Length: 289
Image (cartoon, rainbow, N blue to C red; front, side):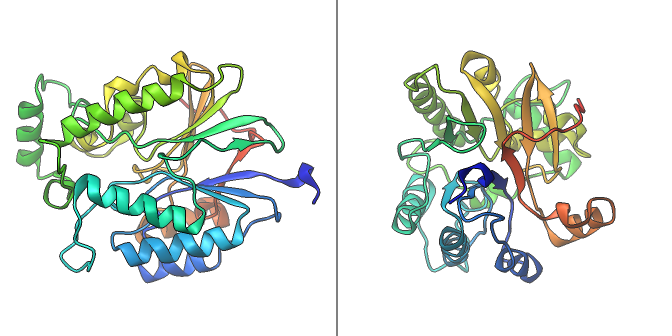
Protein backbone atom coordinates (compact mmCIF):
# COMPACT_ATOMS: atom_id res chain seq x y z
CA UNK A 1 0.00 0.00 0.00
CA UNK A 2 1.25 3.49 -0.87
CA UNK A 3 0.93 5.13 2.57
CA UNK A 4 1.53 8.57 1.06
CA UNK A 5 -1.94 8.42 -0.49
CA UNK A 6 -3.78 7.60 2.73
CA UNK A 7 -6.06 10.26 4.18
CA UNK A 8 -8.26 10.79 7.21
CA UNK A 9 -11.79 11.88 6.34
CA UNK A 10 -14.74 12.92 8.48
CA UNK A 11 -18.49 13.10 8.08
CA UNK A 12 -21.49 13.45 10.40
CA UNK A 13 -25.26 13.79 10.50
CA UNK A 14 -25.84 11.05 7.95
CA UNK A 15 -29.49 10.59 9.06
CA UNK A 16 -29.88 7.38 7.07
CA UNK A 17 -33.52 7.05 8.09
CA UNK A 18 -34.13 9.34 5.11
CA UNK A 19 -34.05 7.27 1.88
CA UNK A 20 -32.02 9.91 -0.01
CA UNK A 21 -29.38 9.92 2.73
CA UNK A 22 -29.31 6.14 2.81
CA UNK A 23 -28.48 6.20 -0.89
CA UNK A 24 -25.64 8.66 -0.21
CA UNK A 25 -24.12 6.30 2.34
CA UNK A 26 -24.52 3.33 0.02
CA UNK A 27 -22.44 5.23 -2.55
CA UNK A 28 -19.77 6.37 -0.08
CA UNK A 29 -16.34 4.84 -0.71
CA UNK A 30 -12.75 5.65 0.24
CA UNK A 31 -10.39 7.30 -2.22
CA UNK A 32 -7.54 5.00 -1.16
CA UNK A 33 -7.60 1.53 0.45
CA UNK A 34 -5.86 2.94 3.53
CA UNK A 35 -8.29 5.80 4.22
CA UNK A 36 -9.79 6.25 7.68
CA UNK A 37 -13.24 7.73 8.32
CA UNK A 38 -14.50 9.68 11.33
CA UNK A 39 -18.28 9.53 11.83
CA UNK A 40 -19.16 12.36 14.23
CA UNK A 41 -22.64 11.30 15.26
CA UNK A 42 -26.27 11.37 14.16
CA UNK A 43 -26.01 8.31 11.97
CA UNK A 44 -29.68 7.47 12.61
CA UNK A 45 -32.31 7.11 15.32
CA UNK A 46 -33.11 3.39 15.10
CA UNK A 47 -30.43 1.01 16.33
CA UNK A 48 -30.73 -1.21 13.25
CA UNK A 49 -30.06 1.75 10.95
CA UNK A 50 -27.02 2.81 12.97
CA UNK A 51 -25.63 -0.71 12.77
CA UNK A 52 -26.35 -0.98 9.04
CA UNK A 53 -24.51 2.25 8.21
CA UNK A 54 -21.49 1.65 10.44
CA UNK A 55 -21.14 -1.95 9.23
CA UNK A 56 -21.14 -0.80 5.61
CA UNK A 57 -18.55 1.92 6.28
CA UNK A 58 -16.36 -0.35 8.41
CA UNK A 59 -16.27 -2.83 5.55
CA UNK A 60 -15.03 -0.16 3.13
CA UNK A 61 -12.65 2.02 5.16
CA UNK A 62 -9.46 0.82 6.81
CA UNK A 63 -10.63 2.32 10.11
CA UNK A 64 -13.89 3.92 11.26
CA UNK A 65 -14.05 6.10 14.38
CA UNK A 66 -17.44 7.00 15.86
CA UNK A 67 -18.59 9.62 18.34
CA UNK A 68 -22.29 9.56 19.33
CA UNK A 69 -24.76 12.22 18.35
CA UNK A 70 -27.99 13.04 20.11
CA UNK A 71 -30.09 11.15 17.54
CA UNK A 72 -28.44 7.78 18.26
CA UNK A 73 -29.33 8.33 21.91
CA UNK A 74 -33.03 8.94 21.27
CA UNK A 75 -35.39 6.23 22.48
CA UNK A 76 -37.86 6.08 19.64
CA UNK A 77 -41.32 4.50 20.13
CA UNK A 78 -40.82 2.63 16.84
CA UNK A 79 -37.41 1.17 17.77
CA UNK A 80 -37.43 -2.40 19.11
CA UNK A 81 -34.36 -1.43 21.16
CA UNK A 82 -35.96 0.39 24.07
CA UNK A 83 -32.90 1.12 26.23
CA UNK A 84 -32.50 4.67 27.51
CA UNK A 85 -29.72 7.03 28.46
CA UNK A 86 -26.42 5.51 29.58
CA UNK A 87 -27.66 1.99 28.84
CA UNK A 88 -28.44 2.93 25.26
CA UNK A 89 -25.03 4.55 24.85
CA UNK A 90 -23.31 1.43 26.19
CA UNK A 91 -25.32 -0.72 23.78
CA UNK A 92 -24.15 1.48 20.91
CA UNK A 93 -20.56 1.07 22.08
CA UNK A 94 -20.93 -2.72 22.02
CA UNK A 95 -22.45 -2.61 18.53
CA UNK A 96 -19.48 -0.55 17.34
CA UNK A 97 -16.96 -2.87 18.95
CA UNK A 98 -18.57 -5.87 17.24
CA UNK A 99 -17.95 -4.07 13.93
CA UNK A 100 -14.38 -3.00 14.71
CA UNK A 101 -15.43 0.67 14.99
CA UNK A 102 -13.54 2.79 17.56
CA UNK A 103 -15.64 4.58 20.21
CA UNK A 104 -15.03 7.10 23.02
CA UNK A 105 -14.67 4.13 25.39
CA UNK A 106 -11.73 2.59 23.54
CA UNK A 107 -8.02 3.41 23.34
CA UNK A 108 -7.62 6.43 21.10
CA UNK A 109 -6.34 5.37 17.65
CA UNK A 110 -3.04 6.83 16.43
CA UNK A 111 -3.01 8.03 12.82
CA UNK A 112 0.40 7.27 11.30
CA UNK A 113 -0.37 8.36 7.75
CA UNK A 114 0.41 11.70 6.07
CA UNK A 115 0.30 14.52 8.61
CA UNK A 116 0.84 12.10 11.49
CA UNK A 117 1.46 10.75 13.95
CA UNK A 118 -1.64 12.18 15.63
CA UNK A 119 -4.06 10.81 18.20
CA UNK A 120 -7.70 10.69 17.08
CA UNK A 121 -9.87 11.19 20.16
CA UNK A 122 -13.60 10.50 19.73
CA UNK A 123 -15.46 12.22 22.56
CA UNK A 124 -18.89 12.00 24.15
CA UNK A 125 -19.51 15.21 26.06
CA UNK A 126 -23.23 16.07 25.62
CA UNK A 127 -24.52 19.52 26.66
CA UNK A 128 -25.68 21.25 29.83
CA UNK A 129 -27.81 24.21 28.64
CA UNK A 130 -24.92 26.64 29.27
CA UNK A 131 -24.98 28.03 25.69
CA UNK A 132 -27.72 30.48 26.69
CA UNK A 133 -29.23 33.24 24.56
CA UNK A 134 -28.27 36.79 25.52
CA UNK A 135 -30.37 38.04 28.42
CA UNK A 136 -30.93 34.57 29.91
CA UNK A 137 -28.96 34.16 33.13
CA UNK A 138 -30.18 30.72 34.13
CA UNK A 139 -31.09 27.45 32.46
CA UNK A 140 -34.71 27.94 33.51
CA UNK A 141 -34.89 31.41 31.96
CA UNK A 142 -33.28 30.17 28.75
CA UNK A 143 -35.62 27.18 28.42
CA UNK A 144 -38.65 29.38 29.07
CA UNK A 145 -37.51 31.72 26.31
CA UNK A 146 -37.01 28.78 23.94
CA UNK A 147 -40.51 27.50 24.64
CA UNK A 148 -41.98 30.95 24.03
CA UNK A 149 -40.14 31.12 20.71
CA UNK A 150 -41.29 27.61 19.75
CA UNK A 151 -37.68 26.44 19.40
CA UNK A 152 -37.39 23.28 21.48
CA UNK A 153 -35.09 20.38 20.55
CA UNK A 154 -36.72 16.96 20.21
CA UNK A 155 -34.15 15.76 22.73
CA UNK A 156 -36.48 17.08 25.42
CA UNK A 157 -38.91 14.26 24.59
CA UNK A 158 -36.64 11.45 23.37
CA UNK A 159 -33.18 11.77 24.97
CA UNK A 160 -33.26 10.44 28.53
CA UNK A 161 -30.48 10.90 31.11
CA UNK A 162 -31.02 7.61 32.99
CA UNK A 163 -29.56 6.79 35.46
CA UNK A 164 -28.48 10.41 35.97
CA UNK A 165 -30.93 12.91 37.39
CA UNK A 166 -30.59 15.23 34.39
CA UNK A 167 -28.69 15.75 31.16
CA UNK A 168 -26.68 18.39 33.03
CA UNK A 169 -25.48 15.72 35.46
CA UNK A 170 -24.68 13.26 32.69
CA UNK A 171 -22.76 15.99 30.85
CA UNK A 172 -20.80 16.88 34.00
CA UNK A 173 -19.76 13.24 34.39
CA UNK A 174 -18.70 13.03 30.75
CA UNK A 175 -16.67 16.25 30.99
CA UNK A 176 -14.68 14.96 33.98
CA UNK A 177 -14.06 11.58 32.35
CA UNK A 178 -13.06 13.16 29.04
CA UNK A 179 -10.63 15.58 30.64
CA UNK A 180 -9.03 12.66 32.48
CA UNK A 181 -8.58 10.72 29.24
CA UNK A 182 -7.19 13.70 27.32
CA UNK A 183 -4.74 14.57 30.10
CA UNK A 184 -3.34 11.03 29.89
CA UNK A 185 -2.39 11.38 26.20
CA UNK A 186 1.31 11.94 25.49
CA UNK A 187 1.48 15.76 25.14
CA UNK A 188 4.07 15.37 22.38
CA UNK A 189 1.41 13.81 20.14
CA UNK A 190 -1.07 16.28 18.56
CA UNK A 191 -4.76 15.49 18.96
CA UNK A 192 -7.72 15.54 16.61
CA UNK A 193 -10.74 16.01 18.87
CA UNK A 194 -14.00 14.56 17.56
CA UNK A 195 -17.32 15.44 19.17
CA UNK A 196 -20.83 15.65 17.81
CA UNK A 197 -21.58 18.98 19.48
CA UNK A 198 -19.22 21.92 18.98
CA UNK A 199 -16.70 22.26 21.79
CA UNK A 200 -16.90 26.07 21.77
CA UNK A 201 -19.90 28.39 21.73
CA UNK A 202 -18.91 30.56 18.74
CA UNK A 203 -20.13 28.27 15.91
CA UNK A 204 -23.68 28.63 17.21
CA UNK A 205 -23.60 32.41 16.68
CA UNK A 206 -24.80 31.91 13.08
CA UNK A 207 -27.90 29.87 13.98
CA UNK A 208 -31.18 31.22 12.63
CA UNK A 209 -32.72 30.58 16.04
CA UNK A 210 -30.29 31.48 18.84
CA UNK A 211 -32.40 29.58 21.37
CA UNK A 212 -31.31 26.28 19.78
CA UNK A 213 -27.77 26.84 21.07
CA UNK A 214 -29.03 25.48 24.42
CA UNK A 215 -28.82 21.96 22.97
CA UNK A 216 -25.41 22.44 21.32
CA UNK A 217 -22.69 22.02 23.94
CA UNK A 218 -21.14 23.10 27.21
CA UNK A 219 -18.92 26.02 28.20
CA UNK A 220 -16.82 23.55 30.18
CA UNK A 221 -15.06 22.37 26.99
CA UNK A 222 -14.31 25.88 25.68
CA UNK A 223 -10.58 25.81 26.46
CA UNK A 224 -9.72 22.24 25.52
CA UNK A 225 -8.22 23.26 22.17
CA UNK A 226 -5.81 25.49 24.13
CA UNK A 227 -5.17 23.27 27.18
CA UNK A 228 -4.27 20.23 25.10
CA UNK A 229 -2.03 19.81 22.05
CA UNK A 230 -4.85 20.01 19.51
CA UNK A 231 -4.22 20.06 15.78
CA UNK A 232 -7.89 20.11 14.71
CA UNK A 233 -11.44 19.73 16.04
CA UNK A 234 -14.13 17.84 14.13
CA UNK A 235 -17.82 18.25 14.96
CA UNK A 236 -21.32 18.19 13.45
CA UNK A 237 -24.84 18.77 14.80
CA UNK A 238 -25.37 22.27 13.37
CA UNK A 239 -25.79 21.15 9.74
CA UNK A 240 -23.63 24.11 8.68
CA UNK A 241 -20.68 22.61 6.81
CA UNK A 242 -17.66 24.88 7.10
CA UNK A 243 -14.23 25.29 8.70
CA UNK A 244 -13.51 28.13 11.13
CA UNK A 245 -10.44 28.90 13.24
CA UNK A 246 -10.23 29.68 16.92
CA UNK A 247 -6.78 30.34 18.42
CA UNK A 248 -5.27 29.05 15.14
CA UNK A 249 -6.96 25.66 15.51
CA UNK A 250 -9.27 24.59 12.65
CA UNK A 251 -12.77 23.58 13.74
CA UNK A 252 -14.33 21.49 10.96
CA UNK A 253 -18.11 21.09 10.79
CA UNK A 254 -18.63 18.01 8.61
CA UNK A 255 -22.41 17.49 8.53
CA UNK A 256 -24.40 16.09 5.64
CA UNK A 257 -27.76 17.00 7.18
CA UNK A 258 -31.28 16.40 5.94
CA UNK A 259 -32.04 16.07 2.21
CA UNK A 260 -33.58 19.55 2.00
CA UNK A 261 -30.34 20.97 3.41
CA UNK A 262 -27.71 19.17 1.36
CA UNK A 263 -29.66 19.47 -1.88
CA UNK A 264 -29.68 23.24 -1.36
CA UNK A 265 -25.87 23.19 -0.97
CA UNK A 266 -25.22 21.13 -4.09
CA UNK A 267 -25.67 24.20 -6.30
CA UNK A 268 -22.69 25.95 -4.71
CA UNK A 269 -20.58 23.02 -3.51
CA UNK A 270 -21.39 20.28 -6.00
CA UNK A 271 -20.48 16.79 -4.79
CA UNK A 272 -18.56 18.32 -1.88
CA UNK A 273 -21.93 19.01 -0.25
CA UNK A 274 -22.21 15.35 0.73
CA UNK A 275 -18.70 13.88 0.49
CA UNK A 276 -16.60 13.32 3.60
CA UNK A 277 -14.30 16.22 4.48
CA UNK A 278 -10.56 15.63 4.46
CA UNK A 279 -9.00 16.18 7.88
CA UNK A 280 -5.46 14.85 7.32
CA UNK A 281 -3.34 15.89 5.63
CA UNK A 282 -4.82 19.20 6.79
CA UNK A 283 -6.45 20.90 3.79
CA UNK A 284 -5.84 24.48 2.80
CA UNK A 285 -9.10 26.22 3.67
CA UNK A 286 -9.83 29.94 3.70
CA UNK A 287 -9.86 31.22 7.26
CA UNK A 288 -13.48 32.27 7.73
CA UNK A 289 -14.23 33.38 11.27
